[in-house]
Length: 450
Image (cartoon, rainbow, N blue to C red; front, side):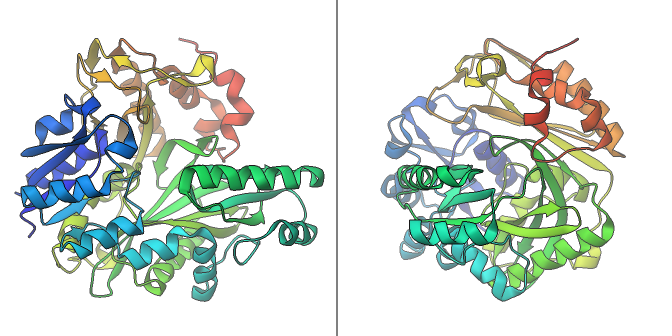
């Protein structure tokens, strides 16, 4: 087993990884910026190293400082969490060059699947359905020709993209050129690469992802699917597992996910994401890291995905077969953000004057927050994730409502009321959800009623 792991991240995911390591008897090293010196992950780790100033480029994206911290503290492996360097092939390659294990897939796999157009090409070769569109990156003229074939609306997407950046929806042909260059510029600013590709825009789909884990010996398992359709501006807000799709369609998607993982010789934890349009599903991307929403899968399977990542990195074979994986009940996760929904969800950093966390069987709160914690203005606004498990979906909804009502975060604005209104919405309760849900119901969701 691993002896000492450095966590190249911050916030709730760093805390989550540290806790898993401690439970396995693995020592941990935290890295932090000057803005995070009082953060919970710094306090919980066995060792902590300041890697730079508050801006991410000077700290959490500073590969040299992170690698130096690992070497100086004797860490034999680095867990990147999600975001930051988690899907940076250069960082994975640098770890290998320095004889440090990267807790994730190989640099080659990250590079292949991180290029969204190349990922689609590989999925076509694997026999996995993909959204109709360009085979690779397109020039302006190629794009203009392609939209005549695909017909509007289309989606222009950054090849190196993620998180909704470098993405534009084109509904009118006359706007294509403007949208094309806007997507390229945003992609260049966000990912230092301005390549874009085009695919058919399928409106109001279900966004379904399949969790996989794979060892170094060619064994791949799926841990079921999650429904991540409740989104705002391509950012996930609420996730749940399992989905409410029929068993036949779920079986087809999980089989496709296994096929995709085998095709790219995947190792470690990852996610295959699909959109579902009626009874047809299409691959959209592969996330070569742990996901924010992984706890809902853990709640219904009883499998600790972070611990599986650590075991796989240590060279262990998967201890279970696919037939051993069972699911029970229903889980829901909501992302608690320090933001003001009434003012276009603007971030609300500041001091948490008081924090009360709900307790009970099947209730979990993954967070880095505590009373008197100062939320810095430099990073993502997520305070934590509230996750519940019930015997069925309605029980999970009721448990989440009760937990949200009990959760107290004073001193900063949060999106709790907005989340409550989603959970109270009749269409949501019925399961009538897709990626257009929030847009359709936004005004109603912003009107909080007790």
